[in-house]
Length: 472
Image (cartoon, rainbow, N blue to C red; front, side, top):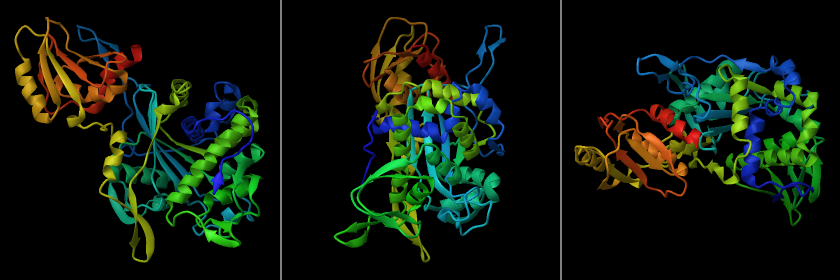
């Protein structure tokens, strides 16, 4: 029933818009910092930071230490700017800052507390130049974890009710990481007040409808078909709507499905329209808008571990991202009931949907492997059996002697190469070849020690593998 804005100007494909939306969620002001660093420094102190316990967020990915032959550390371990990170993006229904007559200000929970209205997991992979996105429905019914203890089973949105935002955001992070065995490295929180401010600063956002639309519960009303420019308050009523109706043949009829998935889609579509308005008006207009930067600072809450430098680095890596490098994932869920409460429940396929966010998106059985024996003595026979037992599609050949154990792989098959390398001691040197196909070529050289079991950790091997990826 809803079409996107038809305003003139530069149009972007949906993957480009999504990456822009991710940047916005990380704070519009941060994206502008390179141009307005002085102004940004003046408001950076107003950004709220939430102190997080040591066991809530996953360890920051680090680079391997470079050590000389004498054992001296030449380059110490440091945060790895191109290692993948998982961000949890949290949109809250906080009414703080809203006018008392704003429909969104009428909340059924205490001031200072909020429910999670939007929950999105984003895997940011600068080394591969890719971003993976998956929305997690707020009505998903799960055990809520805090401090390693399951408190109760409840809708996921209620995680933020545990001790207010300062404790609630870490509780939501812990609940997701525990239930789905997925690491969360950082999180970002935005609220409704900031949302309204941004829309109003843009001069409104244009939406086009095929018919009159309404939701009396959220106080959203569009009285006729066509395009209309909505201010911040009206826009918030639109994205908050849970029971949207359309005027069809003279009757108001419910549109969409009954669960929260419809509203999630509407929120994403509206975010796209916000970004279209920014693009149509000219992003440079906002680089000199101190009010917008200050508004962005007021709407954003970060964990206490992410730094401005790291965020700026991410912006640099994704400045020229290709549209097909933004990948959406869908979490399979089904309708259910908890007593008389309508909920969403996981399906048998739900856990597998998180594999890419765990760095385990490849099955061994799906990785074709060419094992090249380039040693003086034949070590390949034993290794071949071990790798075959794991399930690799394996072929073995011999080659001239080679000093170093290597993996040759196409850059787009980085993850498959890492999977193979986890079983080899020492971790092979990675050589990336465009157009190499889907096969991973493992060459056992003179430095080969043994088949490794248990395998090296994903993080350990990725740290080595990305050195070669970054240098090409």
